[in-house]
Amino acid sequence: MDEQLKKQLEIAATKVRMGVIEGVYNAKAGHPGGSLSVADTLTYLYMNRMNVDPANPEMADRDRLVLSKGHTAPALYACLAHRGFFPVEELKTLRKIDSRLQGHPVKGKVPGVDMSTGSLGQGISAACGMALSGKISSDTYKVYAVLGDGEIQEGQVWEAAMFGAHYQLDNLVAVVDNNGLQIDGKIGDVMSPYPIDEKFAAFGWHVICINGHDFDEIEKAFDEAETVLNKPTVIIQRSTKGKGVSFMENQCGWHGKAPNDEEYAKAMEELNAHLASLEA
Amino acid sequence: MEKKATRDSYGEALVMLAEKRPDLVVLDADLAAATKTGTFKAAYPDRFFDCGIAEANMMGVAAGIATTGKLVFASSFAMFAAGRAFEIVRNSIGYPHLNVKIGATHAGISVGEDGASHQCNEDIALMRSIPGMTVINPADDVEAKAAVLAMADYVGPTYMRFGRLAAPIFNDAATYKFELGKGVQLKDGKDITIIATGLMVAEAIEAGKALAEQGIDARVINIHTIKPIDRDIIIKAAKETGKIITVEEHSVIGGLGSAVADVVTEECPVPVIKIGVKDTFGHSGPAVALLKEFGLCAENIVATAKAALGK
Image (cartoon, rainbow over all chains, first blue to last red):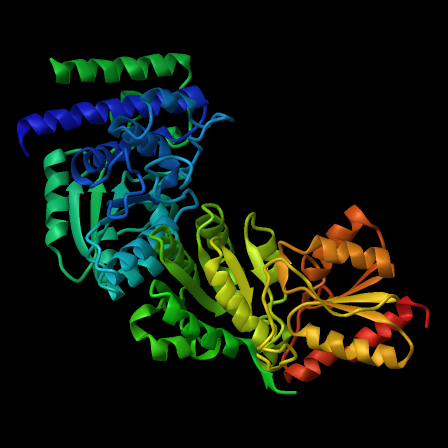
């Protein structure tokens, strides 16, 4: 990847992370850990890959993204805001009683949100439906489904995995954000979904494993997915829960907790410092 | 009287619909031969997609297809469509108010020999509890076909209930018109009102005739749209006849009887006597024998009406 583009994406992802922290802090609730782990990939998709138009959010041939791990809505909202779908300032209204930025994404309420999600395991089925519909009418759009690694404990995910392979949905790319933690602890301790790569391969998917915080690897993976024919692709990304905020990294306690005033100030200080270093 | 199961009507209506709706997509979960979407599959194989025995995913796939603007019907037995997949129907279809038509067959106790595991007496209760969900339970072949065609033009999530057992065709195809949300008064009467839905409408008609022979003037109403329910026809019946009997092949908890009672208690409190499955599971047996055993027949409607009137 071009160094200048990479720097732009790193800057954008840092702003997205700041949007996550702003939202969750002001809401006094929400899910920062998984939002920060998936921030780089969502930033890449919305800022550099997906065919979307903030002026025409329902454009028929747009690429679609279903945030199957819907609790990480703060990262999706921050991406959509920075992509121009609504004002960045609105991120501070997350989860407020008069806000359209619901705790989990709602289609039809927020421009750019392609599917209502939040109940884990359901988004990938909807993504399969979008991809199948594209195949039926020979549309060229792509569908992205972003899942958590704990989420794939849901049986519906594997029903969808079977479906995607059976109908050869090569216009579908799933991302599994493998940050290794869920509410009750390490995913391997709670209910191991490992080996994730071999499971998807056995279900007939093309599997790519990457570092989810390396834009070169992220881009390469989505480029590779475009070359795959007659089967869907899953990108399994190793990631760090809470990435970018030192005291949140790899702490499952930060799955669904808002920072207090002091923690907020420290998180923003770190992200601001990182942004300044990138912009220097 | 000629008889046909409304599941057969459903399959035939999908074929009729396909001709005018090139965007129609039909999904099933390995039950196409039984739900009769197989009739559609045979005629339009390119627009039929089997999801395998995976109802949860099927409902999500239907939701995804609906987001792209196509008309989609998703079919399984009522037990699995409304029961097993309930939370997917609620969150992936109901919450975003997507235009998915759920065609659920083998509803109620008339499934027969398969027994209680497959006799879904809870689907109306489950589906009517979802905000924005329309719930349709047609009574015969004519009404079922008209309902499918009408609901294809309606935009919004819809649950349509069909049966396995052949039902008498009492509507006239030449004159019948399906009106969403409108009850149909089949017989006027002043002594008591029988409000029935689905397979029980034909029994209610029979009961109305038998009661007339015994000097009791019963009004008979067919409610094909359980949600949104026709409040006016119910309130009018409550005011004019003073007593209501509801009849449904469904649990007395949360179905037609509850929906009618909701309206009556708010607007014009009169006794509402519910005939339905009484908080119990069914069991294996021939459909008609089961219907009799559970009181889902004209004879029991007649007895209940006479008891209600002290006769």
